[in-house]
Amino acid sequence: MIQVKIFYGKNDLRNFSYLVLDKKTGNSWVIDPYDEKPIVDYIKKESLTLAGILNTHQHWDHVRGNSALQSIFNCPVLSRESNKIQLDNDQMIKFVDTPGHTSDHVAFYWQKAEDVLGLFSGDTLFNSGVGNCHGGGNVEALYETTNRLKNLQDKVLLYPGHDYVLKNLLFAKSCEPENIAIDEALRIVRDADTEQGLEWSLGQEKKVNPFFRLNSQEIQQNILKGETIDERNLFIKLRSLRDNW
Ligand SMILES: [Fe+2]
Image 1 (cartoon, rainbow, N blue to C red):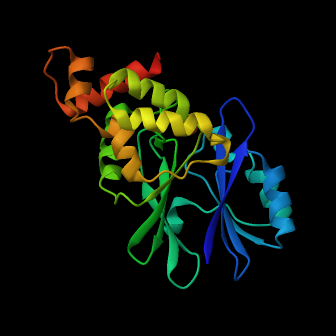
Image 2: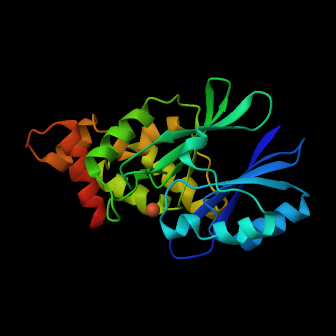
Image 3: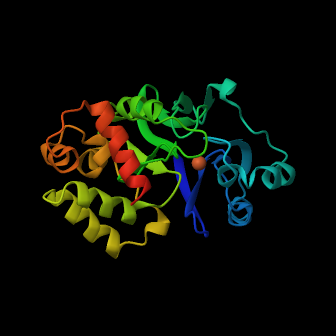
């Protein structure tokens, strides 16, 4: 059975790293290792083998633990060319191009045959938000990528690269004050230990994430104030408002 263990990198950037593991074989793969120490301890405690390292993009906080893990476990960093990684007989991780936050950003679909179970989104999609485009990104590409991810099924679990959920929900609330799903999400988040990860589904994101809700009349009225622009430009406007939030 494939499981996901979440590691919270205790830093101001609030990074998440993930260990995907097969309890049966003991094989594991790490995604975006920030702090190698707790990951090493866990791998040793559970007698796992680290089969490979995956990175969604090359920003330092997503590759910081690579070299230590490589030298301790003598395992490869798996490149985009790997295309997919077989986890067990029928489950796999598939590389998916998700440009926007950076031009060569990839996400990982956790799939059982053709069925997508989870999305490791790096800095493309966060709980109730999307990544910024400050460090070599392109907001139009991020719009296209976000639209494609929106087509995934509601049940797909989201594993984002950072814990920014509280601030993102407050921004979402400012865009869409009447959306009661945001109030409910804020209640959950204020009571939860978000450092453990939320594992919200994309269905939840479709209810609260303003970047998934460009057709919301309330968002359009609040942001555009009578101006008529298309969804692409509304996305760009929202991203720029969030930059200064
Ligand atoms: Fe990044």
